[in-house]
Image (cartoon, rainbow, N blue to C red; front, side, top):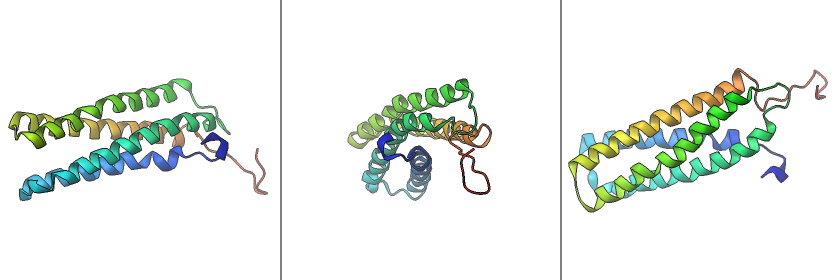
Length: 153
């Protein structure tokens, strides 16, 4: 990706938040209207979430090379964002495993644990996205400044 000369992290980083939000809304609607026969859609959204989470995490390494284009971004802020991204990679295994087990046997306790873990992941994704947006909007990570003629500073 680095050879392409384009930072894919800003593009890919929005997908995990959108997908996990869609999944939480879908699960609420599915439980409210009691249509549990469409379980495969939940698994599809979870798989899509994991795919884009991994792609976003990997592209973050590329984004790191673009971080200090025009402004100096504090390393501790980048490290904190990276740490939460790593935690998400490990945490996303929990709801997937629970969803697969729940699909085989309808255990209410596991279902409650699944929804709790899904909400926890949602909170982690939201906070990690917030940290990333702070890197851009507060510290200027990846922002390249041009003068009026279009030349780099």
